[in-house]
Length: 426
Ligand code: GLU
Image (cartoon, rainbow, N blue to C red):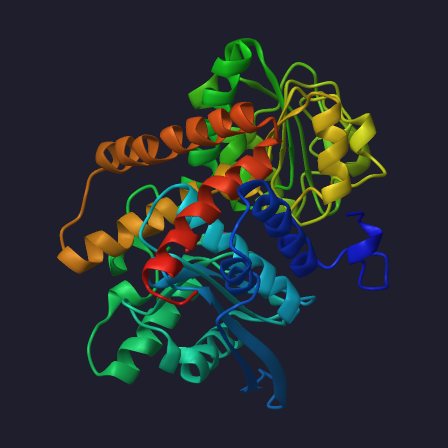
């Protein structure tokens, strides 16, 4: 399949078509039963809502919201909520499918879901953001619940948004229901280490990948594309947990490069003050383009922002030894083939960034018992979940002679297919 084949016409590949094509490739390798395959190709349930919200100037603005419950054969659906101006139902469907494979590949007893509101939080006040968050829960709350479907943060949503949402849901229920949402602040039943969990899980994957490749991460260089939650923590933890030198970082406005290393804490401070890392050059870094960052000669490249950034156009120029996909869907199928042919070791998104949902699952367990774990316990249990999952995928790729993404699909799809079959759905 080519990127063109799944284009939606404006040159941007359709993400949902990409997830289906990836599933098709795994189904072929697995010789999956056609009925099972057909069930797994589509979301089981979705809700589209219209949210009229009063803005600060007194006007009413109408937003579109979505929640997709892709597959709940292994447990309640689980997955984040995005507030993004370009949100589309197909993007949410794709992300919900990936959540299904993500929970299955790391073997946590959850299905996959995703949701979002098409809005631009960068242009909204805190009050407007709160009213959109509450309106969303009033509209979709009837299909959520700790045993049904449990949202979490994703792009442009955060613990404060989760706090408003859990409050609104609790008001609707007439009692506190902290387990309905994860990624909450600690004061409202959040889990220790949830905030850095996506990056932390990625570091455990990189550590394991470096081991199988014989790469010493203490001498490794790392470039990070995207400087939101995952990117910022990847910079901090890349240094702290792996001993790597962070030589390049970027955000939507620009990128900087310093072969001697960038101090992540100072870069974060700069971004908080100015809105971007692009002119954080005071310590000797120089500005480069976002495109150049992806093609740097580094040991580890971590795309940690949007989808479809590694494409057929630039994949051939990527020099990193390891591509650690902290974002969802950063690599198109055409690019995948090129990276694989060039011997670049890709840690596929739904494995590499699964630390977030693993820790969300721990948060759900802690909420259910109303008994909270310390940092060491969360950290050790995260490691114990994600590292064996990495090795299962790596070994499957070696056995089958396929790339890591298809191998990850094989591990995940087998598990979901077994649950679907046992339940008698196909
Ligand atoms: N939004 C995150 C993801 O894409 C976390 C989802 C969750 O914790 O439920 O994996």
